[in-house]
Length: 90
Image 1: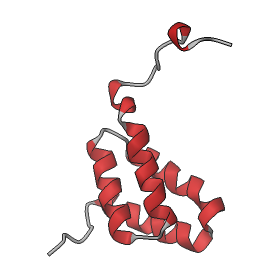
Image 2: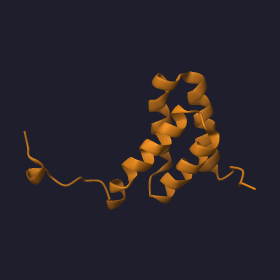
Image 3: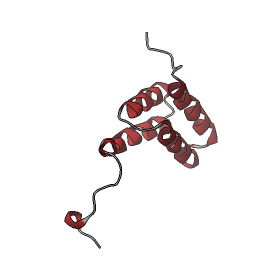
């Protein structure tokens, strides 16, 4: 088993170092079915350099745990951000 000092560096771009936190926060927002939080964390994840496809992957991975109805809602919420049509807070 390799030790941490002998592990090879990740082959992902530098943005990947902050991406796990963004992905976890998005997944948690999906899990509690919070539309505002999903919008916020999807927007922040894109600002961190994640791709729209990576956001979609998080939604798809959440479906077995949260259920199809919640997954479909989350998909629509992430799509709001992907399409740039999310309502702005007042």
